[in-house]
Length: 491
Image (cartoon, rainbow, N blue to C red; front, side, top):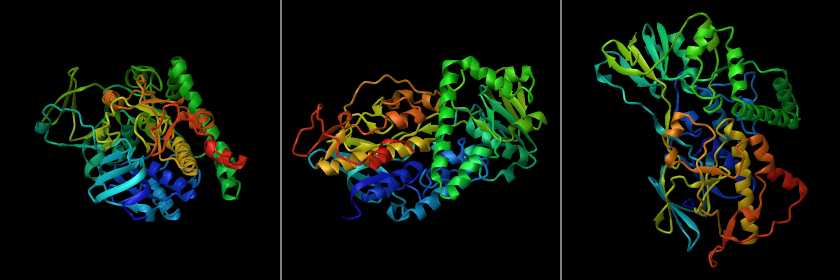
């Protein structure tokens, strides 16, 4: 098979793309990865701002087939990028990656059940398309800033801040209150003359002790000595804890509010907490930033926290809408990112696919788009846990089709009510254009056990010489019990 003619093409060599590649390779399914940059690692290789890290414990964020052994819970973005590169090299994924290849348009033809991909490096054809290119745009979200050109200092987004040494002897204003701002705060505070954290509205923040505990250490030691099941059980229990906290905080918000008030009780006064740390929304309606070192900065008054909205810039600072003014020399924007869910145009039989509010089944398939998969993790926890489960299910579907001589698989397009699990600004700004999730509870500890079993009745299969039927049912192939456990259950 030529390089431009593939059984499967995976778009993106980030966390999801590498996971899909691993499980495809395990079943000897030929595939190619198209990566728009010159590196694997996705967002972890493209961003380099100070304090960049993941809010999820690396033990749960790393792949089950290649656990990252660490004495810390949270590791830097650079460490994750190196881990993903070493995974790609160690499992033979590098040889399948076509770098500097940006997909511009993908068209499916029902006559031959093939996707044709138009890229900057030519045309590729494939039976199955897996879109694993992430969901954030290449450029961050920058709000309108009145009189920005009047400001004598520098204004830049955190995305573009690669060297904190430039902040030495400067009064810095860091604008934002989400995960990016909270993780960057200690690094910027250490480098600058002074730091003011300006938040439009407060967030629920959790301060993490980054030293792994006894059970995490024991699980890792067991894995290194040839007992991987202990680490798998630990990760499952860790995931179960996060799912239970999510459900509890959403069902009984007062429990979450009490938890966070007690969490910060010794670090800030009750008045400060009420003003600067009490959001207008309930716990887990937005993602909860995890802090490392923020508590010490607050207790020593090393930073100022201000809640308010910028009205305009002047020559030496910013004026807030309530009349207050902040003198600054350098403004860093941690205002989040724009969503770009699909990244390229999709067409089926010559007609462009309207992806607005398209039904998104199990974070895996889009309604009415044949032979197309888009693995997506759960929004409130580690992406990896569901990405691996989805990858296994995709491969299970492809194996089933190969055994039955089937050519197409899809799900019907349906009208699904938009009901996002979390509601941060980057989601709400683009909600009318986003897919509508359905088919699972969005709780990986439960979903991976119950909702990701392969059931042929859930899909519409067909052959090139047959018109796919909405009621088409294909019998389940005979597999042994060990294989069933491997493919039907989460990692």
